[in-house]
Image (tube, rainbow, N blue to C red):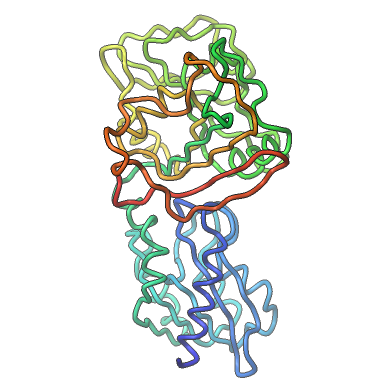
Length: 360
């Protein structure tokens, strides 16, 4: 294995560290090396934060000047939530850039390598390794679908219930799990999607209380369920959007804009996601009951799952489960998560994973 290949393999290993935290952005890794070996390493660790190249440059410091950058994906040239990586590499004095995959995003495809070459940086595109191709599959599939990245989150008991038969649900999980949701999910999304039934039953705030970043937009799907006019999500002054079908009457004296996206008393969730994408929302968390989650799964609109399992049993045939809808008729057709990660948060178990593109 030549030096370029070994450094790119290391960059691919680093890229995996961002999985489940950066989507819909691609996972990317970067290694900076000179004649003495590696001087800097980085990866895209969190959506909206520094890209892999910038993280590697920060670690390398002055040693980046004259070094070679090995990146799993071509450096970007556009300004989004972060500055262009190609410009950062040029300013740091990087002499050479080797990358494995071309970017499928039309907003930046090919522009990074072009800027680098114009600045006198040697650029080499190598054959895309299988590992990198697999890493980028969710990103490329997302670009084709033109909708936000959808994360389904729920907390359930050991017997698969999100509430008791009377509707009691506070709290299924412990304090550590709830803090994790604020820090790792609510602080990293553009919007939180919930249903009017959840608002009526739980009166949630759906704010980010992690102290990191702003609170996301709250989107309430209002179909046939009545929306309680005094719900705090409508009166707390936070950003709220009501997704409604035609003919919906907004409760008086409530905050929140209205977005019409459905007929006959139902919201078209696929159209809703497209409209949110058009408004610039790229990463959405769903915290709702089984009805809304079921409709999203039924229409293949879920990309990622974060499910908490608490060591409690409530029983009861009438106790609700996390995902409703039509569901699958046969076990072999069930959604099977890929890239599964597990973590213990106090007494609770967190299971995360991606819904593979082939099942969507």
